Length: 342
Ligand SMILES: [Zn+2]
Image 1 (cartoon, rainbow, N blue to C red):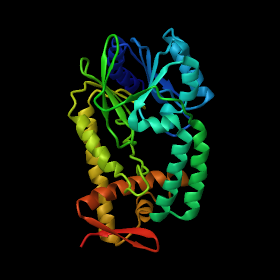
Image 2: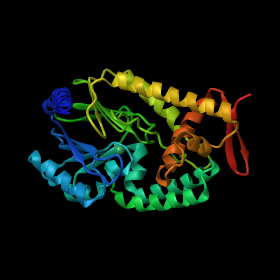
Image 3: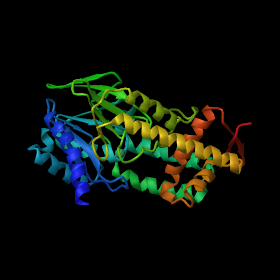
Image 4: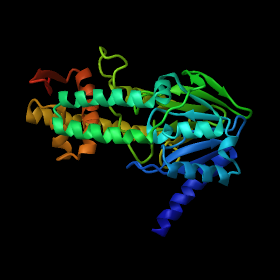
């Protein structure tokens, strides 16, 4: 045990030393979610910048204030807050942090509606998710229960006005660095990564996490008459772009820094391929099935809170098979069924 900890520490120490030399400090802020703490990053530069703020809770606020104090700062010292994507473990505390710091808030154009009116965006998504679950065979009582859970979760979010809207390709200038903005959707529709070409450091948030294969969640289409975005397909495409980057240090929204993003991305590709093939053989062996039936076949009896996650995963894999012409779908009794293409 001790040996393992020592080895991990030995691997991590140079990465943290490098971050410090670049003026980047990782704060682990607690969340009430299964994912565990979220990583926020302080950039000690001009403007003094915080990337992500954590969840809307007293614990998170206290942890953030303590972390800032450990570097000799107060909330009021912050000049700028950047939010990496729309999820509440990253941006939930924005209202309080903006109020107390007076800092400018910046995020990608796609993220703005979520930061400025979190409750409306989240409830529209919950309504859409409920309908989508039922269309894909999730029993109504599970969808209803999950909607109640989602509603309770919304208390962990908040809203604030965005002062600077970022676009892909923008460059954020600091006294000692420049960060280039890239849009890398998939984990969510607003995932943004920040690239320092001089140091080859990538701040990737939840786009790439060492110990979790970021599960692309289903997302509401931009307009009601448009098809559902194919989040896993989009995510794979985003990972391909990131794989081409010459990053030597990648900083995640959860867990440890990543030294070798290319091997990690290759592992993710291999895992996706394995899951896609497993689903294909389930359809080949078991005949037409709904996405929910396939999820049950894969994970057994699914906890209510996992129903949306597992459905997201199955539909993501089915999108890949459908795009390749290997499966087709049909609708019976308002439920979509998938089968191996003739
Ligand atoms: Zn996260």
